[in-house]
Image (cartoon, rainbow, N blue to C red; front, side, top):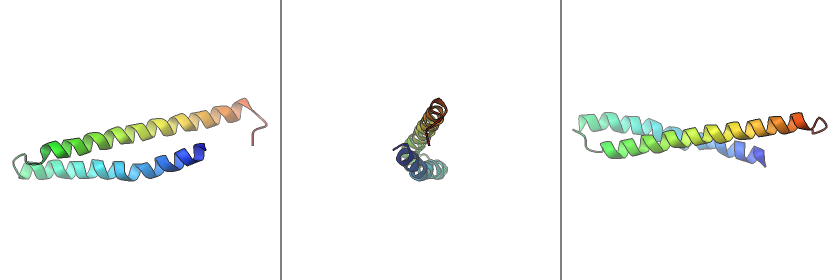
Amino acid sequence: MPFLGLFAAIFGFVPAGLGVVFGHIGLSRAKQLNGIGRSQAIAGLATGYVTVALIVLVTLFWLIAMMTSAIADPYYY
C-alpha cells in the first residue's frame, strides 16, 4: 500500500505545480490590470505551495517508514 501512496504523491505534483505556475502568471497579469485578480492569484499560489509541501512531507515520511521497516527486519523481501 505505501507504493500506492507514493504513486499518488508523484502525480499530485502536477496540479500543485500548475497552481504555482498559474499563480505566478496571474500575479504578473494582475500588475498589468492594476490589481484585478491579485487575490485569486495569491490564493492559487498559497494552495499550490501548501500542496507541494504536504506532498513532500508525506513522501519523505513513507520513504523513511519503508527504509526503517526493511532495516528492522533483515528477512523482509
